[in-house]
Structure formats: structure tokens, C-alpha cells
Length: 358
Image (cartoon, rainbow, N blue to C red; front, side):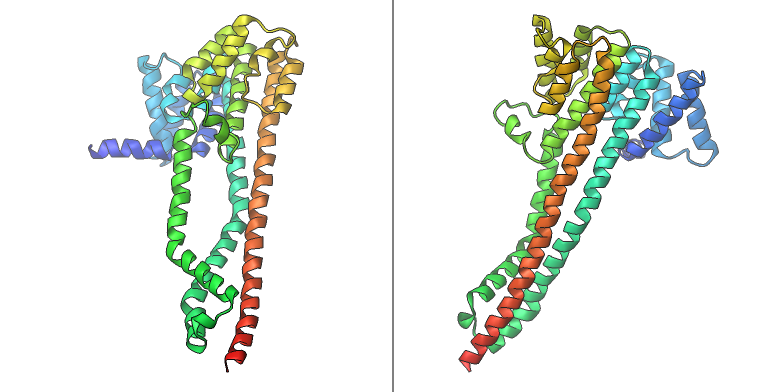
């Protein structure tokens, strides 16, 4: 692998959500003002180079997109040209809109999706800040106990005379100091396992259980919102529901294909009282979203209702994450308070034990 290949991989990794929000926003404005897509992209990359930003990830990716559009690679569609550099749910929204000549709407929906993900990420970071700080304080306290406090106590009072609370705190601090790094490593490994398995794991026994756990449940809800946005975009452009579902199935992740296949099968049989809602209620959504789909399933402007429902689902996701992280924060505060109380109790009991020993 040469230096150019390494540079290409690095730029692809650095092409983050904010880069895409900026690009989609600029492309939306230029397309709305009648500028052809290739010309808009060319102007974007030229402007980046003119003002000293020609080596950033945005320029690198958009130059690749421009080359694909110019040569016909990727089917001369923006969504397919940029597909390798964006997540599947984002691609589905862009592709669904672009196939129906509504790329501008797709760009706006993609911006909304990205901003929702950013809000989720920001919410997680802000809510986790206090628990992380509290756990760091606990770790420092355990280190001080293990290496400073307990050795001094051992010189004054034999360990076999220690009260139970002192023994327990000593064992706890020993575990945290010597095994804490392995616990952190295990948590990182679990997150890596989630990121790798979430889009592809389809086991009908294991996956329903995982989808009830943190991270997996949020992933499922976000995928549901993206799916509804994509369906809405294609229906708005006049695509039939059958073709919409088949197109989304063709480009979906293995995980999403299972749900879309259920919708295809229901739609092929013909829904009864629920109309389109009967078809889209495939097990992907919570009860509230499923109810909304069912209620509005027979409306003539069903696609508009889907769009509103998808945004409501995203808002519910943010609330759900905040409530779960509040529990984590409270547990961290409770742990710190419990340790402080235990240390004070240990000091009191050790004082009494030393007086008895003397």
C-alpha cells in the first residue's frame, strides 16, 4: 500500500457527519437556485482549493463523486456516487429521493437525520460527563485506599483484626486498581462488537433479545426513522409502494432486509383494515409509531404522515436516551456516596478496633 492509498483511506475516515451536513446544505442551496449538480460539486471543490482547504476530507470525497458523475460510474446518481462514504440509512434517504427526481428533499432529510444523530451523540456525551467524572473520583479514591491508607492501617492494626467493612473496602480497592483496565477494555470490546453486529446480525433467536438492550434498541429505533423517511420520499415521487419496498430491500443492510421483507410479503398478500399501515407495521417500530402508521395508513397523503411520524420517532429516541443516561448518572452518584459512607464507617470501626486491641 503506497502513500496515496493511505491518504485516501485517511480522508475517507475523516469524512464525518458535520462534513456531510455542510455539503448537503450547500448542494441544496445551489440546486434550489438552478445550478446543475456536477457544476455545483465542481464549484464546491474549486472553492475549497481556492481558499486553502483543498486537502480536507470533504474535498477528497467530493472530487471522487465528481469523477464518478462525469464518467458515468455509479449510474450517474449523486447517491450512488457517494454511497461508499456514507452510512446505509443515509444512502437510502438520498437514493429514494433522487430516484424520484427529488434530490433536494433527500438532501434536506439527510441533514435532518445527521443533525438528529449529532443531537443523540451530544446528549450521550453531556449525560455521561458526570458519571465518568464520578467514576474517576471513585477510581482515585480506590487507588488512595489501596496504596496509601490500607498500608498505614496494616502497620497499626493487624489485618486479621480488621472489621468486615475494612476487609471489603480493601478487596474492592484491590480489584479496581489491578483489574479496572480490563473492565474498561471489556466495555470497549463490547461497543466494538455492537458496531460490527448491529447492521448484520439476523439470528431470529438472539437478535430480538439484543434489540431490547441499550445501544441495540436505539439502533433499531433510528433505523425505523430512516426507513419511514425513505418510504415517504419515494411515495411522494409517485413510486408505487411495491417498488418502494423492493428498492429499499435491494440496498438495505442484512438487518433491515428482514423487516422490509416482512413488509413486502404483507403488501403482496394485500392489507386489510390497515391499508399501507398494515404493510409497514413489520415489527420494526414501537407501539406508538405502529399505531400512528395504522391510523394514517389509508390517507391519500399517507407519505406526509410517514414523514411526520419518522421525525416524532427521532424525538422520542432522544428522550429515551436521556432517561436511560439519567439512570446511569444516578447510579454513579449513588456508588460514590456509598463508598464515602463506607469509608467513614470503616474509620469509625477501625478506631474502635484499635482501642480494643490496645
